[in-house]
Structures are given as structure tokens and as C-alpha cells.
Image (cartoon, rainbow, N blue to C red):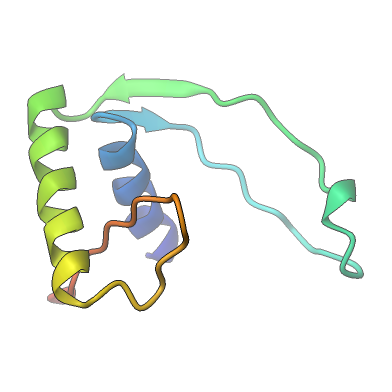
Amino acid sequence: TPLQNAMIAATVANKGVTMRPYLVESLKGSDLANIATTSPTEGRRAVPEQVADTLTDLMVAAEQVTQQKGAIAGVQIASKTGTAE
């Protein structure tokens, strides 16, 4: 599911530790300041930190190949190409 894909990416970005996901039910208007915030809740270690670091390096390399079309100044971007179903 899209949520599972987001959780995988977040786990890799968090050095192999899962985080509890939170969903926003709806947004009304464009004022994002009114969104309720939560504190991050760590789950379990899903993969060793070294594995997460390797995956991050590969995802950064994949983004460099695609020429960083979504680049943001000062922010390192990583991506995953294609998903087999």
C-alpha cells in the first residue's frame, strides 16, 4: 500500500528504525499551521543500521542519475526507482 511504501522509506531514512505512522484525515483551507502535531514514536529496529546506510547510499545514487529534477537547495534527496508488483 502507499502507507507501507512510505514506512519503508522512512525506516531507511531513520537508520533502520521504524516509526509509528500518523495520518491526516482532512485539511480545510491552506493554513497548515492548524495541523495537529505529534511527537515521533519509535518502533523496532527493522534492519541493521549498516544496511539502512547502504540503501540510503543507493537511493542517493539513483537520484543523482535522474539529475535531481526535484532538487531543493541544501536538502539531500534520495529516490527509489520502479516497484515490481
